[in-house]
Image 1 (cartoon, rainbow, N blue to C red):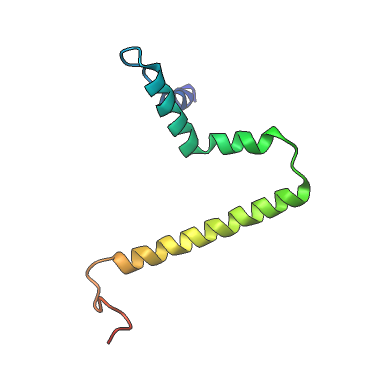
Image 2 (cartoon, rainbow, N blue to C red):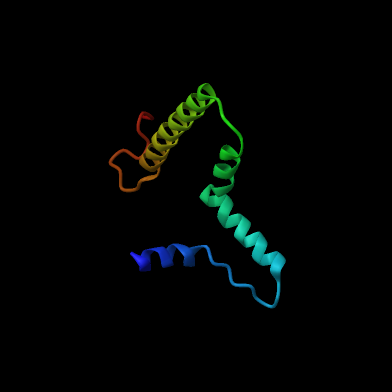
Length: 90
């Protein structure tokens, strides 16, 4: 268990090279933004009414379904070795 926590800590460790703190800070901000830490912080900074919470959660859920479906469709279209490479265009 301790090793797993160490690996999580290591994944967010930024090495400063040549005392270039600005570059390290930019890199850390990019990592935190990709992982969604900033959005999570902004969401919990103020009180959110229950109706807004429900709307936000439903929107995130619908967006996840949409993105998953689109990814599946794109992978289907881009796959190779199909019998009919252009379905519906006969």
